[in-house]
Amino acid sequence: MTMITPLLISLAASSFSGYSQTEIRTLQYAVDSHAYSTALEHFYQHCNELDAAQFMVKKPDNSRFFNLLEQQLQLDINQFTENVVGNTRLHQRVANNILLTDCTDHANYQQVLDKYELALFALEIATPVKVSKDSSSVKWQKQKSVMKQQASELLQRSKAVALVSIVDRNSLSSLEQSNFLHPEYKGQYIYKLEQGWRNIPSKYMGMQSYLTEQQYTKSPKSWLLLLDQHNQFIKVFSEADVQVYLQLLGKAEWHFDNQGNLQRK
Image 1 (cartoon, rainbow, N blue to C red):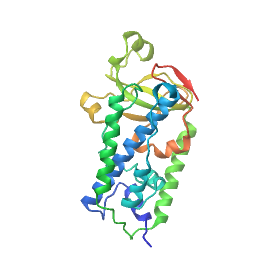
Image 2: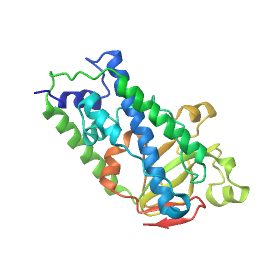
Image 3: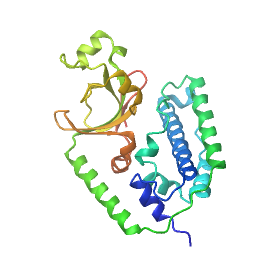
Image 4: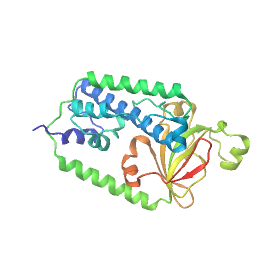
């Protein structure tokens, strides 16, 4: 019987030991496909919540993606999401401009949809991953348990949790900047709250450290903030490291719509 677990162990540890360059490319195509799939799914949910009748965004069909995961990686979607998607090295290579927010921007939506199809095609013709058999599943299960425990402890300390994007402060008016940002904050880039859990912080927040334009270009555009009762940072995670937290948190309790209005679930 083919053993799948060892693949999960090595990938979760951000290691590619034992895998050829062609197999690593297969894994990258799978992670790329997942990124586009997730963006399209979130966009569908977002537009559907705003006005399903007006925008009529089609729910993405991911059956081909799921079948390719089984065929090329010998993983189902749950195994892939929990154990491969968070691999830092793979995630760093994902396009960082997959952004769908405007439900009327059909051209951008179609562009992302086309890129999803190209990523699926690349995965389909890629070399199947050969699963190693020289590791123990017990080790990874312990690692995953520790990660979940650490995440639970951090969430218990957090009074507010928010998914945010990074935007240029100049996208705000002078009045908005004075309302939302501390007078001594000099950074060009700020956090914009998208959705979250528990308490609701300010819609715009200064970052914990300033970014240069070059750093902004290379950095992930989505982050998870854990905040205390004073809205001070407990921990900040890039989107590559948040899977276990999102699983523990469940569905978001509030979000800001396209007009900037707060919507509670």
